[in-house]
Length: 306
Image 1 (cartoon, helix red, strand yellow):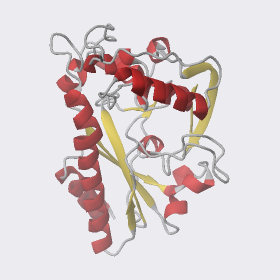
Image 2: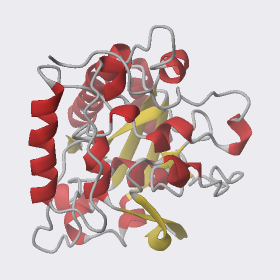
Image 3: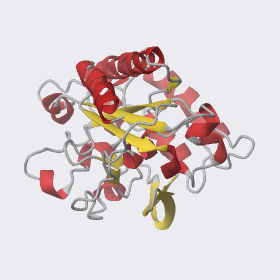
C-alpha cells in the first residue's frame, strides 16, 4: 500500500495540508468505546490526521499595538482555516471512496457533547478527538495543557481527521526531543485557572503512555467559548465587561447567568473572539527564539457601551 498511501498524502497536501500522518486503529484500543474509530466506521483500518498551520505573523501579532486587531485571527481561525480543513478532509474521503474504500471525514474541534452521555463519562467530549488522532498519527505529542504540540509549528496549527477502511501504511509515532518541558507557562497565564497540574491524567496511545494536567472544560469555556474575560481577546474589540469565574467547579447555570449579564453589559458587540493563553504562550523548547508569544493581555481601556 506504499504507493496508495503516498497518493492519499499527495491529495491532502494538494489541498494545502501542511502535516499528514496515518495511524492504524489498533493505536486507539484504549480510547473510550464510543469515540474509537470503529465506533464511527465498523470496518475502520486507518485514521488519517491532517493539519494546516496558522500564518505565523498573524498568530503572533494578533492584538498587538498600535492596531490591536483581532478580526483577522478570529475570521481566519474560525472560518477560513476551518473551511480549508473541511474541504481537504472531504476531498481525501472522496478519493478513498473512489478507490473502493469507506471513509468518513470528521469535524474540526469545536463540536462537543457538553454533558456525559451513555458510557462517555466526561464533559465537553468531541465525537472524535483530533488532538489524540494527531498524536497517534505521529504529528506531535501532548503538552501539559492536553493539546497536541508539533515539532514544526508548536501550537500553531489546527487538526482534522478522516477515518477509513483503507489499510494505509502507518506513520511512526513521534519519538524526537520532548516538545513540552513542563515550563508551566500555560498554567501560570491561564486567567481562569482551567489547567490543574495537581491532578494528572494518563492516556495510552499505541504502545506509549502520556500524562497531562486535568482540564476543567467549563472553566475554560468561561473565557474561550463565552468570552467573559476581556483580556483574552474581547478587550481588543472594546468589550470591558469582565466576569470572574466562581471558585470550585462551575455548573452550566452559573455559566449561563454570567453570559447573559455579559451580553447585557457589553452592548451590541458581544460576538467577540478569545484566544486561550495556553496557545499563545506555549512555544516548544527548540522554537523559542524563533516564535514569539502572542500579545500580552489587553488593558481594559477603550470603548464602553453607552
